Image (cartoon, helix red, strand yellow):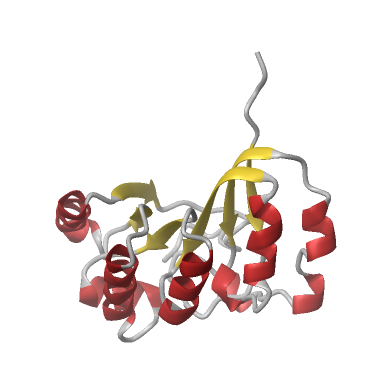
Length: 185
């Protein structure tokens, strides 16, 4: 039986958010250090590819990257903070079979506090509804549970359920990926 290869590609360590559980924003990559099209072209065929970061939508060449990945993966999902609504919508219009997963860290106050982006929650909701309006099928959101947002978990679950979106949760944890080792928020 042939195995199905699943992969994750970290396109950048740049991010416009300043999340309390992730310190990627304190250690941004330089564009010259990030994975480029030539490397992506060498990747093997995959069944599923998650495109992540940092924030993938800070990459100006993201449409070209997705164009190459579409030839290599049956399914592509981009993990994003949902802030770059216009870029997200534009890319999904070009590639309507993409999946989008937006990190939402609670209702308005909790999300904006945790993410460090004033107005971020409203932008996320706008992005989610514009994706729905355009007919994108593969949409979901999730949260990293911590003391500041645990009270919002059920509300976000019910929102996802009412919209027919995938809902995922993660527990707060340390990781070299997030530049977090101190068990502190």
